[in-house]
Amino acid sequence: MVRHIQLTPLSFLGIGIATLLTFPLLYVAYSAFTGDLSQAGNLWNTRLPELVTNTISLAIGVSIATLTLGVSTAWLITRYQFWGRAFWDWGFVLPLAIPSFVLAYVYTYLLDRGGPVEQSWQWLAGADVHLPSPYSFTGALVVMTLNTFPYVYLLARAAFQNFNLSFEEAAQAMGATRWETFFRVSLPLIRPALVASMFLVVLYVVSDFGAVSLLRFQTFTYAIYQQITGRFDYQSAALLSLLLVTFALVFLFAERWFRQQSRFYQTSGRVRTATPKPCSMGQNLAITLSFLMIFVAAFGLPVFLLIQWTLTAWTNGEVGSSFWTYIGNSVVLSATAATAALALGTPLAYLASRFPSKLHIACLQGAYIGYVLPGPVAALALLMLFTDVIPFLYGTVFVLILAYLIHYLPAGLQAMESALQQVNPNLEEAARNLGSKGFRTFFQITFPLVRKGFSAAWLLMFLLCIKELPATLLLRPIGFDTLAVRVWLEASEELYQLAAPPALLIVILSIPAVFLLSKKNWQAG
Image 1 (cartoon, one colour):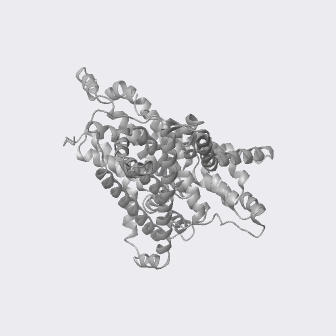
Image 2 (cartoon, helix red, strand yellow):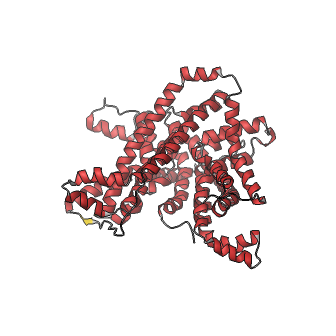
Image 3 (cartoon, helix red, strand yellow):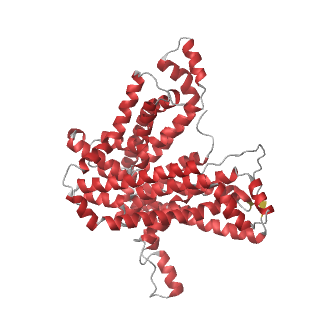
């Protein structure tokens, strides 16, 4: 229930934090419309048609492909008993541990002209036969699909696990076939989960920079980066950024509206969930082979190549002392950003959960703007703000940490807010009645009860920061490289062995966050 309450010092702190997180984007909007507006016409006549077509077509293509892969794998795992089912249940979450730019650089090696895949194909079909170049829509579609289908799988699996089997049985009793029941009953009833997963996939695709930049596929994020670094045209970059953010916001509001229209409620107390059915030998073979192909393409083969290249680089002495410097930079920077995010996010989450006034909820929603703010846009916002207003701070680690906060604080806020909502406010009220005040109540009563959720939020933000690429590329101090930056720089020069050690380490560090994401009840405790 939203209440009107009196402003407190904590309220002013929340307002200040929300302003800090939203002001850079507002400054980009201001800068975009205060310069020469003829740039907008030039963009429309030159770049916009291609960028709009590429970005939307890639988002639609990846959505269709991930929906097919995610729903089919989730359906088979929740409805059938087959070989290795326990492994596949969590194995299909592992591709989320591989950043898109790492997967892209592996597949440019595999699919490039003269690469292993084309050589194998020419051995079968003839030396004159060539495969499509990975530097294309097809390459971007393959990489982004393999990288994002686990989002659909996770939400579809949860929906099928909680699905009431009585609806399907009623449809079949009325004469519907299995396929009719699936498409006309099962899928429509899990529509809210599918819409939520499509939102995650589309938002990820339109905001991705690493994969499209290595695959040289022109989307909004890649064009923004080129405008900043190649032409130093900040106004054009700002206009493109506003278009991208507008597109993301429109899709966000559309997803919220559609989810409201697609709510379903169980009106009876009898709920029957599905029991996995045993498979025949032929079904076991078919499912295992198809699952193995998906897993190898999305996780197994890339990790195998990264391990092979890393061992080769290590044996050849190509992993120098600078590699440990990159590790130190990444760990210190990510840990600092995650700790700062926890400190800034706690007042916002606490105010929204304990004193849900319109102001406090607005502050929380302002912090969530990072959800629709791609990395290059966040970097551009801070770049323009600090070069124009506070130039002495530009080029320092402080600006980079602020970019991480804007971009990744929403991920931590979700865990923090959920953890606080699971703690009974009466416990805090009882402590205050016994004389405990303010911070003492929070640290002695509330924090011990939410420490698991807050620890999960810190870990998630830490690992997201380690994988961050575009903002780090644009805002890092001179000579300050992270693991993600080194992967991108070496992969851009097709130095696959040199890019492998930092890429493999990022994957290894990301696996705990993936398991955290796949668990159900980690928010509180």
